[in-house]
Image 1 (cartoon, rainbow, N blue to C red):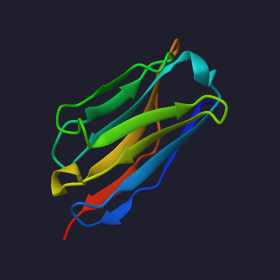
Image 2: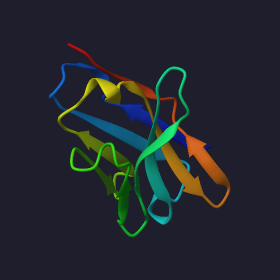
Image 3: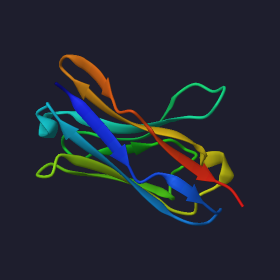
Image 4: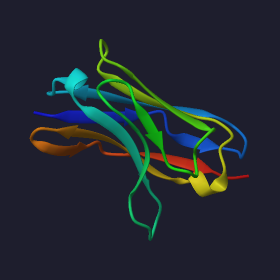
Length: 115
């Protein structure tokens, strides 16, 4: 079955960096748009960054210039490099795949930015 597994979350101080990774299985990874979403307590899940099968990217305005999404089709992974982290970035981050059978989601990884 389809499985998306996130890793790399943790607790960091403002201004520091984290790199999240998502490993996919059960899909033809190279064909599909991948994305990172996040959800803070009491808030809706929001798109942070997306990357198409062709490598086109898009970002939420709040993370432009700080976050970079990338994919490695050979390894079937998608990563999110997060620099200059802010407390407002604190959330559970979810990996997403948009496939012909619908959307699939990972279990989430917690990112906490606090001094």
